[in-house]
Structures are given as structure tokens and as C-alpha cells.
Image (cartoon, rainbow, N blue to C red):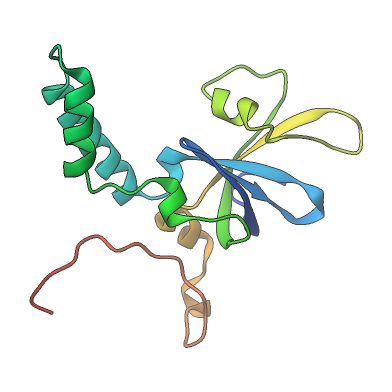
Length: 157
């Protein structure tokens, strides 16, 4: 397994901030919420910014209820479910001793033991821009599964 490798995986757990994905050969990896798609990440950032603007008052409980009603950004559990097949690309493979920004990967037990007994974390992305980057244009033809994301919905067609 190496960065850039394109894989089919199966969602095994859906968390608030990541997905755990079962991979071939008994491996597993983690998809951080920020690597689902660029559009999803932008929606999360907009939702966080709007909460930051309205959430500084003393009525945090009331503001949170209002934000939930106004926020149309779906949760990961609304987009993915255990058993769902996903195309993913490996973005990072690191040893368990490495320190970095992958606390979510550690917490989700996405570290695996290889044959030599060493532990490593496999970080994945479902972002269509990253997943489709490895797909040669000559292979895009009728019947081929290509990842995508809906950027907007127009009422005019």
C-alpha cells in the first residue's frame, strides 16, 4: 500500500469526524471528514463560520438548536453507511510511531499490523478530484464507475 494507490473499500464504521474503511488483504484505513470532497469540506467550513458568528452569546443551548434547524450540511452518517462500497485513494501511510495531525486515525483504530509486526496508519480520501486523478482518460467510457459530487442543485433544470 502506498500513497496514490486507488482501492475499493467497504465502510465499516461511520463516526462524526471520520469513516473507517475496510480494505483488501485485511487492512483498514480512515477517511477524515475533510477528505470526503472539496464541496463537502466547503459546506462544513461555511457551517462552522456561521456558528462562530452566531454562537458567541450566553444562550449557547438556544443558538445550537437554531443552528441545527438552519444548517443543511449533512452528517457523515447521512451520506455513508456500514457495508457501502467506496472508491478511495491512499493519501498517507505512516508508522504508528509517527506524530502528526491524525489523532482521528489513532482513535478509530485505523492502524494495522503488517506481516513484520510493525504498526502503520493508512489515511484515505474519497474526494473525487483525488480519486479520479489516477483514472486514465482512455478508461472513461460507458459503464465505467466514476466518482463525483453534486456541487449545486438548480430549480431550472
